[in-house]
Length: 314
Image (cartoon, rainbow, N blue to C red; front, side):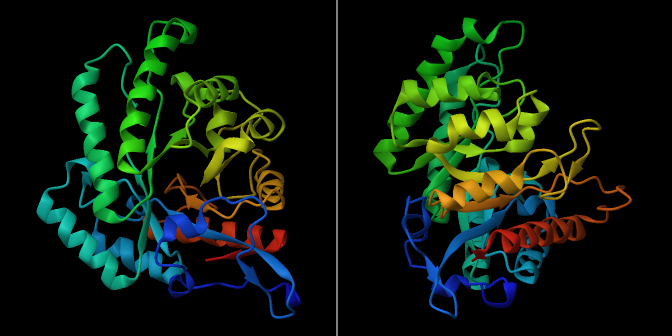
């Protein structure tokens, strides 16, 4: 880019159907720089409940940092699945008024024991899909179940049965499910993530790639997880971690190989969401502070990394 300056494309420049416009399309081109050369465009989003429980504070910090979307996990101290109809309507109105979109419903679905009451849990899943419609999101984040006391291969059939069931419902509803790798669930390592995605084999199940979670699960995110999963990734969760200490740090400051991973993703045509999930410690001497400050630090680090990679952040 001219002068190495990061260009920011505001939400108004996005197509009305946000999810369709910015989903990963290999080889697609989203923007040009001032000199007429093609450049890469990604869209910033984030977990605004790490800023504050308060809706006004969430929105103010998103606007201050120029983040055009949020991944909706909670607001007002309540999980997104537990919001009342009135709370849904009020928050949607606030977001619309601020020009902020919802990239995904950051649901806790699948973060339960696979041997628990999964009928009741499926009812919760239906609510997550309903929330996606209510907030205009094309994605629902979910997990692939804990299996305490059993080896992963002992619960594979049960996990796959539930994933097939949820994907069938998502397909009928026109929503894409994003499987997040998380320590302790079936899909916590890259081999089992690939197993899930290949076994279900449906475009309504894609991957949300979290390199820090892979590293914390003993997987080399750059050398092992990314090569195995990059063909399935629609979405990134952005945080970083130091391998030796376990300290969570801003993007590019840790050992997840985030710069190399994002660089390769951009080269392969990734044009989707990068979701800031700071997870920074309030008392960290370098990256601490209140929720708003930690979110700002995390966004600043990601923007700096994108600038180095020659990317445009919307």
